[in-house]
Image (cartoon, rainbow, N blue to C red; front, side, top):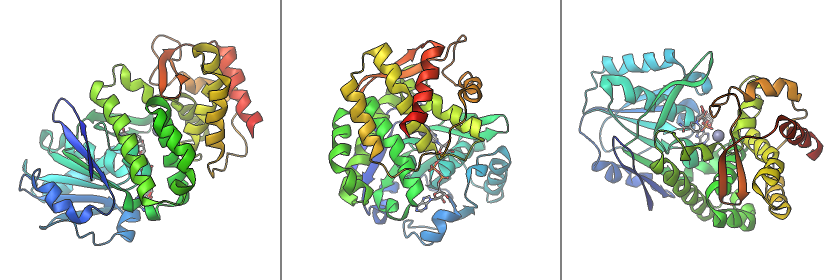
Length: 358
Ligand SMILES: NC(=O)c1ccc[n+]([C@@H]2O[C@H](COP(=O)([O-])OP(=O)(O)OC[C@H]3O[C@@H](n4cnc5c(N)ncnc54)[C@H](O)[C@@H]3O)[C@@H](O)[C@H]2O)c1
Ligand SMILES: [Zn+2]
């Protein structure tokens, strides 16, 4: 088991990465268990596959919710809070989020406000949640006005990434997670990128050793970024590589049509020409990145929304200060540059190049 440390204002914590480590969970948890009620929050997709995870040494309440992004709402959060209150969960209680990013974001959000905050730990079960959403303490629910508009920075006490969970993850979820893996390599780890090039086949075959190496490398990059900038005031912006266009694509298509990881990969492809012009990314390196992305078994959307539909959503991006979109671009693999403004015509032509690729 590899332990990666994250620093945060409320509490530091470790992210443990391993394979088949859940049998050790009671021991791992022992140092963090305040002794009150335990509440496991999960969804039916996880519960159906892992109905009796033998990982707790004492009784726990178990909440199984119907899976989907719809769980990230204030209504579902209130229902969960009322369950906790009904069970008289005290300040010594603890929430255990068992699932993907949706469960983590909802359960963490509830942990952050119930009794002004109770402890929580995460067992992320999707690739995306193991490499991305469970690290950094961002918890949130959505509003009809947009995603993640109500939330907090509220670090968990412990994160346990067991790659054994990834064996049965649906292919589309797995490949979507790989989108964030490639993003993570591009912003922080040249060696991880090289490993993806050489071991992609083993990774796609869900080889446990390869997955453990990849997840640990990604956790290190993300842990490093969020430890330096917990509150998203600067450095953390690099995590948004590929996301300016991805968020606009998702908004223009109506939230869930295009898998997030695929949208991120399209967003990364779109910023390669911008990176060449504004940051000196070499053509050879851009081609290398295109080749790796091209090897993923993704189905590109049959058509993309026209640029005129996309542009208004670019302006809603979080990185917008004044009236310019601030792009995250690449100088090289592992060397991101954030806060770059780019002439509109260049953005238009980069976006158009996406349709020509396919
Ligand atoms: N907090 C953050 O910093 C952060 C960062 C990135 C994304 N997010 C959020 O994460 C969410 C997406 O998370 P996600 O991609 O993990 O989706 P998800 O949580 O909806 O999980 C996807 C599906 O996979 C199923 N599943 C989970 N684990 C499984 C397993 N081991 N085997 C088989 N099926 C399994 C679930 O039941 C669900 O149906 C979004 O809401 C996004 O906003 C948060
Ligand atoms: Zn993302």
